[in-house]
Each structure stands twice: as C-alpha cells, then as structure tokens.
Image (tube, rainbow, N blue to C red; front, side, top):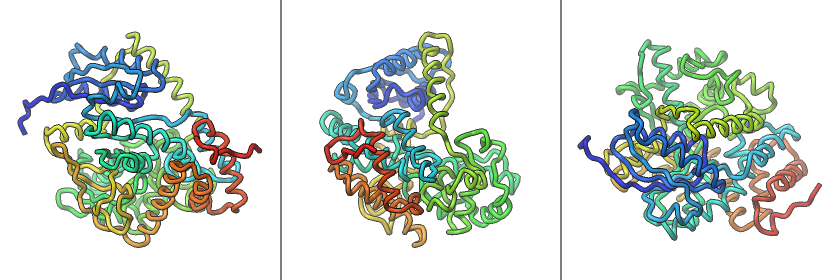
Length: 468
C-alpha cells in the first residue's frame, strides 16, 4: 500500500449525530487518521445535540495534534444527511432512557433479571419493536437518497437492526459492527501473559474464527503465532473457573457496570467446548434464566453485574454537561483511539489497504446450519468497495440449536414489528429462554405492561394495549 495516498472529500452521514458516546469516539478516530478527510453530516432528532457536536467537531480543526481534517455539519433532515453520502453510520437510542428503564426493570417484578436488556430477553424484544420501524424509515431513505453508500450500524439490537435494513432494501450495502469479539481477543492476550509470561501481545495478534449471532458469538479456532490456544485456554479455565479472572487491564466487576470476571464464559467453555466470544453480561441473557440470571445473588456468584438504567441516566446527565464544556471551550477534547475498527473499515472500502474483521452480515453461505439471509456474525475481508464474508463453518449441534432458536425468535419479532402483529410478537416473547420459568399468564401480563410503557414508539392499532 502506498502510505502517502490520501482520499479527500469523503462524505459521511451520521444518523444519531447528537450522540455523546459513539459520535465523540468517531471524531477522535477521524482526527487521528492521516489518509482520509472530508465532511460528516450530523443528523439527530435532537437537532440541538447535533449542533453541539458540529461545534465540538469543528473546534478540532487547526489543533496541532489533529492529523485528519474534517468538517462537521448539523442537518435537519435525513435527506440532507444522506444526499451525496459515501458512508452512513447509524448509532441511535431507540426511545429514551425511560423506555429502556421499562425494558430492563419491569421484568424484575416477575423475578426476571437482565444484565443489559438490549438484544434478547423481554427487554431486547420490546426494544426491537420500537427500533424496527425507525430502521424501516432509515432504510427507505437510504434507498432513495444514498443507494450506493456503505452503511455501518452500531445500534442494538444489532442483528435485528441490520436484518431490517436488508428486509426493506435488499441491495443495501450494510454491515453491523460490534466490539465484543475484541474483548475476547484481549482476554486471550492476557491469558498468554498470565500462563506463559508473554507480554505486550496485541489483540490483533490473536487470530480467531468467529461464528454465531451478535452477542452470542463463538470461537472454534484461536491461535497466536501458529500456536493453537485451545489447550492453553482449557488450563486457563481450570485455573480461574471458581475465582474468575479480571487481569490488570480489565475493570473490576464489583465497581464497573460493564466488567465481569469471565466466569460465564468459562462455564460455557466447560459445557460446550468452544470459546464464547462476547461479554458475560450479554452471554447470560441468551441462556435460560436459571443458569446465570436467576437472582441478583446468582449474578454476584457468577461475578458480573446488572447494569441499572438509573446509572445510565446519571451518566447521560454527566455527558450532557461535558458536551456543554467541550462546545464552549471550557474543556479540551482529548484525542484517544477508541479501538473500534469503523474508520479502518472505511479506509479499506476506499481502497487504502485490506483488513479482516468480524461483522454482522446476511448469511450467504458463510455459516452452515442456520437460515440463509439470517444476520450472522463471522469474519469478513474488507477491500476496495467490497465486504466478502469468510467461510466460517458450522457450530456444533448443541450450540447451533440455541443460535437457531434465537434467530427464529428474532425473525418472528421482525415480522411482528413490520406488520404490527401483536399476536406474533407475543409468540416470540413467550419463546425467549429468560422467560422460561414464568407461566403463560405471567408472560402475557408482563408483555402488556411493557408494551404500555413503550406505546409512544409503536404504530398500528394492533399494538394497542389494555391498560391495567
């Protein structure tokens, strides 16, 4: 690759451009990238937040430590954002924290606990019902105004968001990006230091084969410098199965809502023989609630955390205040690489060097044992204007059965949301493993309560609920 090559005038549409998390991360990564420059159009239903990010992003220009030169522009419509876009980035919060609070905490009234509540389980399903209509509109607008753009989605529920884009616009060039596999690669690097004394092993040095669906991904091969890591991982699991492993680079699960001691991951390895490649908080939600999420005490025994939405609300207030300071110059924007690969993917798609990364993409034969066109997470090669999934193989039947169950529940949820089919949504709800200990009457009652709490984001008379 010619390292001096530079692609100018790249046009990025950012849907959710008022974000105080992913958007700031993108700004940082773009500012540190020397080979690409252009314009980011920020669209958000909260136009004031998008305008604030316009100010924050444009303040970066001219700083001595900023390499990449980008213009940021807040726009009032999706059409304005998408027209002329080469890339579309989507990171939105479907609804508000109040709806999320219902997603996560209303099921607790029935003894059902969720550590995240944004992908599967009752919270993930109801979140999907209000997210899918938004993605139907986004896909329709992309089809009309930016049909050739590459679309990178970060929004959860990842599988269903990406699936909706293709359902509406089958020719769309969309991928879903998630960093959970990165965390497992980092764990394997820490394992090499702990077990073998090998220091400074980078995540990218750990080569893995990825199979599964988002937040329920698995590795059936992992290596470092042509060394098979599975035998060492077996010893690592045996050593830390009871105590858990956090490592010097990891957060402490007792005071970090996003950290864990990997005990769920270790237990799944003992049960199924493959390395589960997502965080414990996500993995636990795909299993029956009696396994890891039976009670807050059970969660503590497995050494991960339930992330309360009140914490997210307080964190949101802190980020709002930080945004004010960044916009008025009272606080300097600190540049730090996020570790995400979105910008590297953009570079590869622009012809600035190939990369291989895990992505969520329609199954076109890259993964066996699951339906065609289901959104699966495997590795893919990014090159000029191309994303080519790598043949990943097939999961063992014991794992594949669980994966297929969730794929079919998600497909039912998609069709329910698109067709405003409340009965189909309830059938999907009833089949989720986290609700397996409830009676049908209890599940129906919970379903009605959660729909009522998110009714402002549902469309169609079919979704009208009976007020309790």
